[in-house]
Length: 428
Image (tube, rainbow, N blue to C red; front, side, top):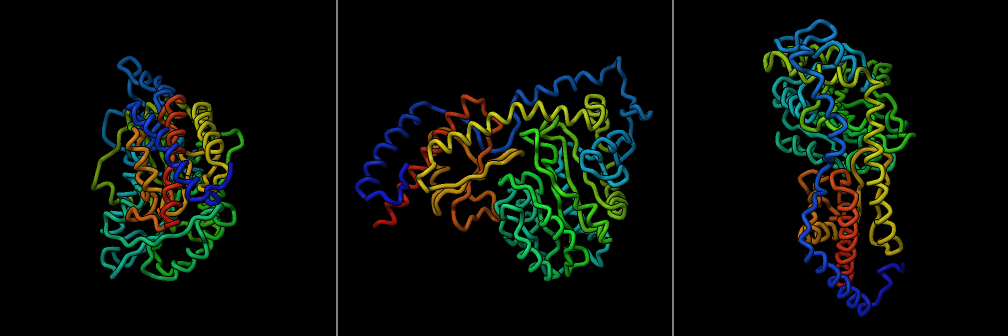
């Protein structure tokens, strides 16, 4: 296909008429499809249906370690569940706390406690600082940015590269003592799908922040969410930081939200023993213990980490055709037009799509008006402001394959319409 930039104005106007006629056909279909978030679909949730049978009056609620899970206690989590999630996050059992169903909740709490009390090694609470700043790789995870904005923390954009965050920028900004941390999704990053390279992870380990209580919020949400047998490999930042005698500098988050039940999984935070003890003293005021019945269900269903890994191959078998379908349609519909580019992740839940500058909001709006809901354009940037108005996050997981094909072709049609309109405006 010929690049649209080579079309004459008359050709663009004729093309726009044809595209709008096709678009009105989609509008007439009354579609109601959702590609707004990375939600597991029903087939994925059904993979864990047997978990509901692991706790009953006949089976009882006493764990293998002899804990009556109906009662109070064990704020840090059941021993066997700490071991299960410690293996998943590649930490020791005494370096992890198993919480409720949401790692986002644990991140929010970590940020809130840091503001109120500081973190281990702080000389005062973060809220007592004249100004607090946080580094935000972009495009990134909108809910991370929402937490930071909620607490009034100034966010600084850090460009994402094919290897991860631009570490020249990171090293520059951490020289400012008001910069207290950075958000990271290091494996199959949301939304780009990038896994941080060894070089990037090593530079993280070598950081010398001016703030002695600087923290890396390492959200390893997709640690075992490979789409292919040969998944990406992420270097162990925690081990590198230990070698540098800086293991206190990182909080590692993970969950089973896209492994078991999205709304009823387990979340965890892993950190140095100094950090764990510091957090536990504060958390003990907040709650006596988390839901050990849910913890028991998970350990009975999966057994050990090998059980989780085998389970995730079933997820991959469901998700991989969806990602490949979207990638094939994008290539078929848009290759050669020179109006867009997109990532081809090997895991995770998203495809990051870049339109021509100035076209993302119009593309998302066109899709919505024809019955396909996408995440808002700009959501992957702090304050919802994409300077180029070009980034769109595509989430292929929730629709069926048939619905996904319809949504992907409508999306491509919307991209073409927005691009042609943009070129016509430029020609005036």
